Length: 391
Image 1 (cartoon, one colour):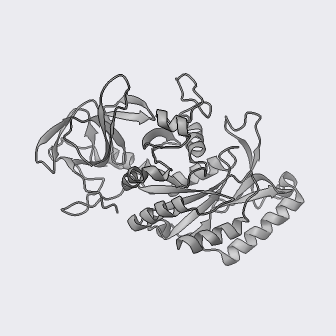
Image 2: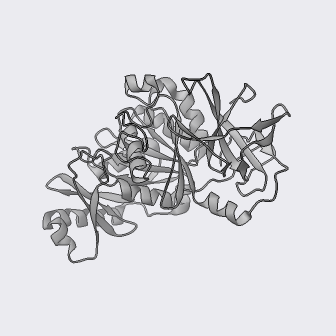
Image 3: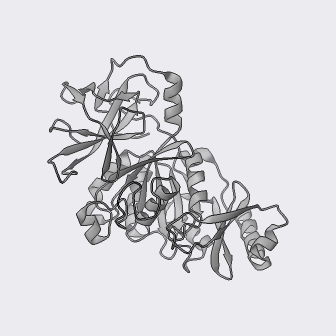
C-alpha cells in the first residue's frame, strides 16, 4: 500500500457503474522501470510500445513523422545526452490491459523526480544488464521500492551478448538486494548463442527467429511444450540437454513461485531476454500483465482509500512546466486513486479546502497529448495548473 495521500476529491459524484469500475480497475497496470544508466531501459520501453501496437517501428511513434529518437526520450536535453531525464507517461493497450508506463529518469542527477514517480506506480520492472548485474543506481531505486513494498519484476537484458552465468546472476541479486528470486523464464543457448527462453510457469519453450531489421519489428517465435518429443529436433540435442540440466537444478535448489510473496515485494520473478533483438520480450510482457497487481488501496489521513470507492480521489506526483514549446503551460500529472474521473469535474483541494475544476484533462504518449473524457483508478492524466496544485 502506498503512502501517497489523495489530495483531490469529488465526494458528490453521481452514480457509479460498479461493474464497469471493477472491470476497468482489474485491467489496469501502472508501473515504472528502474535501472542503472545504459542497462537498456529506453530500448525496452520502445519494445513494450512496439508489442503493444503503440508504434510500428522501434524509434518512431505511430501516426507521426519518424525521428529515430527514442519515444520516451522526448525533451531536447534527453536527445542531446541520450538519457531519460524527465518522467514521461506512456499509455497504451495490449491484450485487453490498459498499461500506464511511468518512464522514470535513469540518471542520478534527476533522482528526486524518479522517487516521486515511484510513489505513483503499483509495480516496478527492475532491468539488469546481464554482464553487470546489480549496479549502484539500481540498488538505490530498489531500496525505494522495497520501502514501499512495491512488487518487483526483474528482467535480465542483453542476453544476446556474452554475460554472467544466469544462475550466478540470480544468486548475486539475492545476496546484493536481500530479495528471493524465482526464475520465471530461463535463457536457451545453442552453441553459446541466445536463441530462446523456457517459460517455467507455462512449461513451454520459445525459440526465436532473428529478423533482418535489427529488432525494429516483432520477433517471430516457435512455441514448443517442454514435454513435446519434437523439442529435441527443434532446438538441437546439445541445447536440449543443457536446458534440461538447468531446469533440474532450478527445480531442486531454487525458490518456488508464491504469488502473494510477489505482491508483498518479498519474491521477484526473474525473466531473461534481449530488448535489442526482441527475444524474450513478448513472453515477459504477457506474464508481467498476468502477474502484476492492479491498482490497490492508497493511504490517506483518514485511512486506506480503495480504488472501488464511489467517489473520485487522486494525487499529484509531478508538475511539468513548458511541455508545449508553443505555449507557456504548467501541467500537473495526476494519478487517479478511486472512483470515476470525468472531464471538467469539480473537485475539492484537500490542502486549501477550495474547489478546483479539472478542465481539459489529457493523456500522454511521451510529448504527444490527447484530450480525454474520463479516467479510472491507476490512470495518469495531465491537467492544466495555474499554481493551485503542489507535489
